[in-house]
Image (cartoon, rainbow, N blue to C red; front, side, top):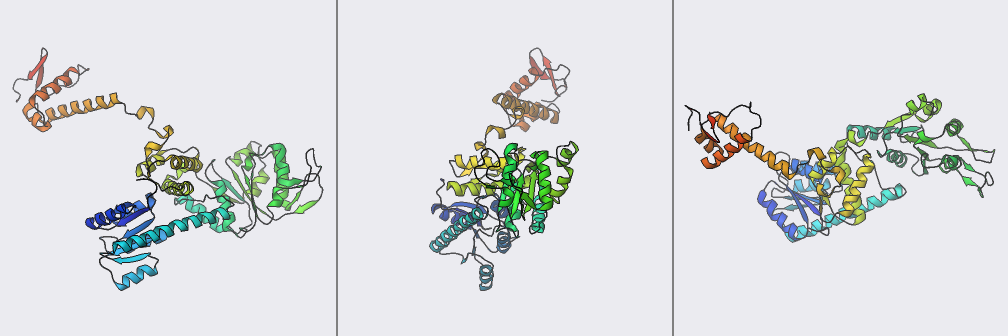
Length: 478
């Protein structure tokens, strides 16, 4: 099916016939359909695949439709849920609608009306997604990404953000490149009391050391060659807001001393000026280096480390929180599908391959991989075949045609040996066990014994070699 289908619908019903009928009707109407006969599988599907709407039965063995609805409301509140049940009542309908169900049908439904309601539900969900995306971009200055994860490490980070978001204390975020350190800094900004104030990000590793002082503190006209006009520094730009010093560990020692003074006095002095300007800001820093080790090596000031490290947030690498990969994949697929105007899903095999990867580039690398997959996708489902060579099976594990043939032959010979051992050398019984003719048996037996390279290897019961042929050992059965 192409990418222009109406949407992806999950149908949950323990009656196989009801699943077949509704699935056929909706598929014919242009929807992609996922089906589940129980709630547990439905939860797995809604977590793994992009789902635009849910149609669920109410009464089912084990966990019922209301249990699934409760899960969906809590974990996927943007997905509309439509109830379709043969056991309807006024009370259950009122309960479902007041809790946020999109619609409630009694079996058998008016299928024309059901398709109209479903179309409205899918359109409403897509509209909400677009509005949420626009809000995110506006709130983050065109920066659409967000923190995603349900691992214990990420939950601790979320709790920390919630605890310190309104504080004025300095924060140091440390973790490997690509783990999302700037996302945490932006989350602190957008969720805190300074959200309406500036967020000024400075990459200390990207600005030449000759220019970074002028960038941070500003300068007056004529302060140096090329200073044709006054320039406001980043600390002044961040007044009443947040300044984020990314990769602070790359800062020169001489500049570290000036930064320490600014943090102590809360005032800056532009280059070429003796006037001190009071500034109120919150400092958030990040690094992928071990700053304690840098202090021991004389590359970072210990007193500055104490100033910037009032609150410490450690971001784990992606390889240590692989349970977050399915969520990240889903979020990135949604993000790039929205941008590319596509509707795609990923297979569980693909997610499995991605979970096994080591991800040296962390979340940033995963995001780039998903972007490539979405942009290059031709069908409606992304499978492991679309991945680049870096995700292929290692050479030593690859199966060639030669190895497959040899492996199958080994398995066949082993089966022959096992059958003979089990039948105490009785070849007639072994033939029956293996389900092959006596002629085929002797041919394979000949291959087995001719192929034995080790003359001291154990013999097959009931057989001895005579010239180029084989016969029963005396006293053995036939």
